[in-house]
Structures are given as structure tokens and as C-alpha cells.
Length: 292
Image (cartoon, rainbow, N blue to C red):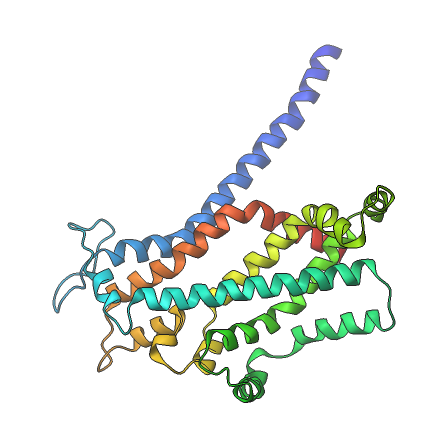
């Protein structure tokens, strides 16, 4: 009886793990399905013609597929490639600029002592408490004085400023999660401060770097308000602003097929990038939260 009792006790934890794992995957599948349904609907809808008066709404399984919506989207304004390139240019500049500043600033806050360090770091985080829209007009005046209005560079600089507090916070926590003894051992082996930073520290905070880059890219790619304020030429607009103009339509009429085609083109790059880097993204957020 004792051996049977031990077998039963061993099986109970296994059964509990199986039930909890099954429930977790089932719940995750339901949540993922809820989020994927709008994307799937937009994709299917983008390949269907817009129904005319008296016609039925598009079905989930269309009787025929067509690229007419994408052709019509490409004929809007300066063309899809122009707006796509504008969005990509801004996002890339924002990612590069944010990484350069936040990585260096985060390493400085994590490794060096200097007067006013905590005050400066706290002041950086205070920017997160400032409502985004309240300082757009002062920023517009500053950018106008620099003659950077209606330019990709001016818009990118504004967006970089808003990404810095989160990036500095996350990179500081990422560097603080690395034991200082590792870099001290590199100093003993003859490495200088910059070599130890580049060869030892940077590879160890790759998840944090990827998290800051991915966060900055997605936020910049989806940003609508600042491009609307700082860009005035139609060929300078980014994809979100182009979609807003497209959704207004003529005489209040909206071509939802063309609009859904624009939604698909806007969503696919971000979705692919996130799926490719999600492992680093989750690890970076966890490391930053644990140290924070």
C-alpha cells in the first residue's frame, strides 16, 4: 500500500501541471484569437471589392479575390511607397537616435557617480508625467526656429525626445543587472573603459537594447499626432496620416476596401518585426522590471 500511495502522490502534481498548462494554453489561444480576428478581417476585406448599393456585405470567404483595393491605394496622393518610405525613415532615425542616447546615458547612470545623479535621473523620468499634446505647440515653435518643420529630421527629433525617458530607465536597469565584477575583470586583463563597455557590457544587455529599439519603432511607426502637426506637405505625410486622409473620403463617402488595404500594409511590418524579436523584447522588459 505504501508504494501505491507514493505513486498516487507522484501522479497528482503531474496531473495538476497538465491541467494548469492546458488551461493556460487554452486561455492564451482564446485571447490571441480575439486579437487576430480584426487583423484577419482587414486582410480578407482588403482583397474584396466594395459592395455597391443593395449588395450584401463582404463575406469571410470571398467568391473572388482582387488587388483593386491595393491599386487604388497606390494611386492615392503621392503613392503608397512614398508614405511607406516616410514612415520607415522616421522610425529608423528614431530607433538609431534613441539607442545612441539611451545606451550611453543608461550606462552612465548605472556605473558612474557624479553630483546630482539621482536628481538628473528623476528629472528625466518626470517627462513621462507631462501630457504629450500639451507641449507640441512649444516644440513646434522650437522646430520652426531651427527651420526643420515639414522635414523628416525635425519630426524624428521630436519623437526621440519622448522616447528617451523610458529608454534611459530601461537601459539603466539593464546595465545594473550586470555584476560590476565582470567589467572589473576586463580591466585587469588590460581593457579600457570603452573596450569593456563595447565588448563586455553591450552584448549582455542585448534584450534591453532590442526592447528599446522595438518600442521606439512601433511607437514611431504608429504615431499620428506629431506627424500631423509637424508635417504640412502631402508627400511628406506618414502612413497613419495618409490613412486618416483616406478615411475622410469625398463627400463623406469612405471606400472601406481601400482603407483596409492601407491597414494591412501598415500592420504587416510591425507584426513581423515583433514576432521576430519578441524573445528579446520579453526578456528586456523582465530584466528592467526586476531591477526597477
